[in-house]
Length: 320
Image (cartoon, rainbow, N blue to C red; front, side, top):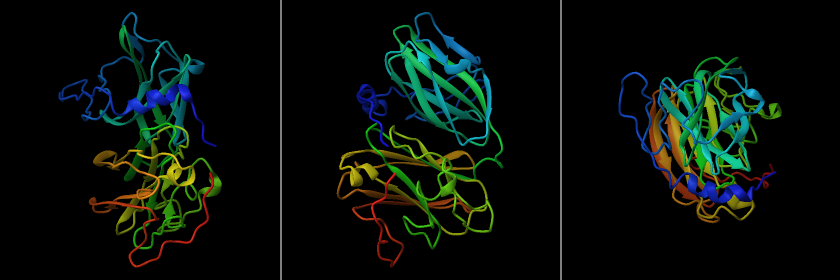
């Protein structure tokens, strides 16, 4: 079910377009590497817990969350209270690099978000700004029970809280969208064990990609991971404008896709506006995970992209 939060819609529309970006250029102690499109570049020397000047927004995690947390899930749902009157950000730092971020929505005094996690240790920052300056809440997160950092990860975000975009990863050579050779919300979503039916490559977990979240009511991120067992050939990355096709909205939605190899961002793409007709699908790129080679595609279409020489797959409307 898609959730609409009217109070957050205006803020969300601004979140990725009117942000004053900053970039950390120092490589000395305490530096966090960021890029120009990241919203905030935190200092690596910030103390764990709350930091904020007098008059800066308060940040109180729900349940009195401490500064060191361990979970075995692929994402972490956060909530708490703040005196901020506008949205904030969560920032996820691994190996002193700001590797992903998203918006902390604020409804009344309550903030919340769902944060996709890497395997192993990472540091998470919450940050808000107000008349008294910027404040942070910082804690260490350890995702346990996984087998190592992802050899490959692709991340999708978008700009409008009322939109629903979907991330697809097609298997090399045989991949057909909306089939068992396509990792998407209907086949390999971690939150629904009945959908973990993919068997790519060698028998067993190696080679099977996992979608961490099917975000239907915010602006992502959605991530597809592949930890080990990558196959030879090119994996295809496709974005589906689900709300444009099924609900008639999301005209003009802009998507951002980031590709990570061994937890390092190696490529970033921003779409032209995805509309209800000619741009329901965006084939972004093809990635050879074994060699690290990436081929740009940038193709928009009104019908599902096909394998070479194949007809579009027959399918009924997909419900969530």
